Amino acid sequence: MSDDDRTAAWYRLFADVEAPGESAIYADWARGVAADERMLRRIRELPEQKRQPNLVFACSRLLGAPEAAYAEWRAWTLAHWDEIAAQALVRRTQTNEPRRLATALPALAAIPGPLALLEVGASAGLCLYPDRYAYRYDGGAVLGDSPVVLECATTGAPPIPARLPEVVWRAGIDVNPLDVGDDDAVRWLETLVWPEQHERRDRIRAAIEIARADPPLLVAGDLNERLDEVAASAPGDATLVILHTAVMPYVVRAERERFFARVRALMAERGAHWVAAEGPPAFTWLFPDAARASTRFAVVVDGELVGAAGAHGQSLDWGARP
Image 1 (cartoon, rainbow, N blue to C red):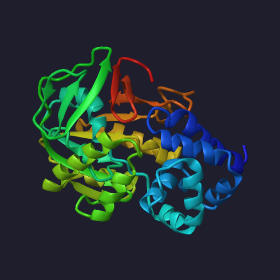
Image 2: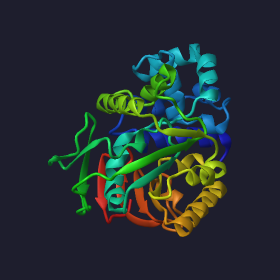
Image 3: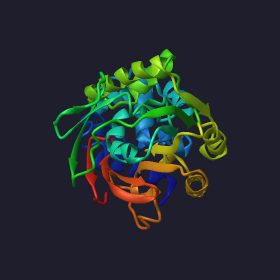
Image 4: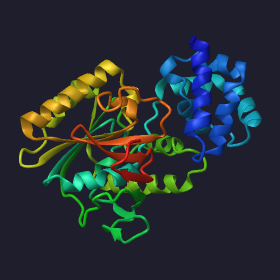
């Protein structure tokens, strides 16, 4: 497939698989772009990793693009393309969705504590507070006491805990960590939420306030280059847990495999645990023939599949394959 065809296919996939049920506006824009040679030419001016629909759309909205039908968005975007392209070159899709912790909580709560939580691809670190949020599964009783309540629908009888884990240390690694005390970083986090997802935006705003009250340690750098260093700073009397969600699509396969090997080494060397939720193609030993088009994540604990989850933590299907 040519470079031109790959870009159009990316937007068609986004329109047909990722956006439906999540954002009618983004589905409309992506469908329009995929069939619009003039827009595709502008997008192809960007480096390939900067052409992704969510990044281009978010940069346009950050600068004031109307959340309107494709024709109106297209006219505005073409008129402001140079500014949008400049933003795309310096921004990253760093969506920080704390609700994904609802799908990790059964695993985190089962690990002997207290926990030292290390997240790679941490963005602003909003997923480093599993003990500071509350949870409601299947509309039942609320577990925990927090202004942030993470709702999750389940099947397959996941082991919902009776109490939250104790986290005594929390740290994150990110190529470009976002500071919740920085208004521009917070505005970008909010813009990465898709247009119609008002509840999700409110949840992130509330989570930001929790992080501002007790900021985590966030370290800038490559996950492979900084992992050992940051892990070594975790307290020795706590159980180290390596956490990541929706990060591996941004890591090339060779570096991904290197990271997984190092995580397994930390499990052997210091009794660390590993909790992850990613698209199936990330876990090649579990899904050697996985297609990119899956809209659900594989939930993996210590390298073993335990279930499938909605990409934003909205559902957990324990024991299922994504």
